[in-house]
Length: 354
Ligand SMILES: [Zn+2]
Image 1 (cartoon, rainbow, N blue to C red):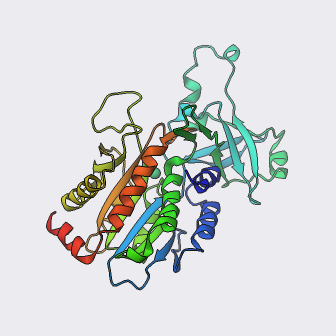
Image 2: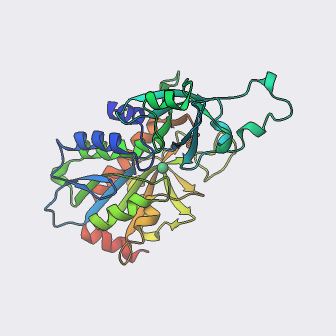
Image 3: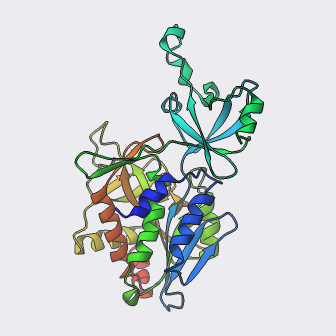
């Protein structure tokens, strides 16, 4: 995979604190973009074929990752925190995390776990809630933490334990959800054959997806797309259970036909299936229990055609998620193939099939 994906997962950015990701996105958009759009919450997009007579097609990842925020510095110098995005508390205990201070550097810390010697019958109790955790940055007092640059309201992210598996095919990282989609937007801008593009392409990434799809609402109001594609990591259940529609690593991109907030339009479903089959791009059907930015965008104005092209990912919303590089190729290929077909006539045909 391109270096840009690695660069993006290394950066810190919880919801509302995406500025380092946005700066990276912008720098990479500038050589390709005809115009750069940024809304007031901070979502950022680049356009190609700005003056096209074709429809506006918008592709979006989201820049934010799950993490935490400093809510209090105790007198002894430990940090209390609140989760930003959905995190299962037990995975946080004993993890190394980093506080991003105002100059952009980080202060390392560990979520202190009681040694077994100090535990009696409270083994599971210590990890029940974020209220149980103290981030230990090695400060000896509140003043010492202050002197190190720590303030309430700063973001805390997991340390990025980036690794490629021994077979060379899969990659671990903290933030595939959704630096993958953010990177894919840049990758598409770099790779698409502009001369044969029948539409106006707007590609980039939203802010604040993990706290309720907030950036997607404002960015889509700005762009007003005719067709919207969310590119997001979807959690695979394949480690734990056999399921036909629960997501499997290495089986291609996901057609998300159902989630609680967005039911895939039948015309869009047919379009994706036919395009994938025509180009022999592997795919799997996916039923989700969560939502993506597509759910928010579909409700703009009098309704917008949307879909989520899902990237299979194991163990998201934890310290280490895993993706398969061949799935990334499938995601890229289906998006490029869809873009090549999205004319006004095609969109009318899709609507008629719904
Ligand atoms: Zn996501």
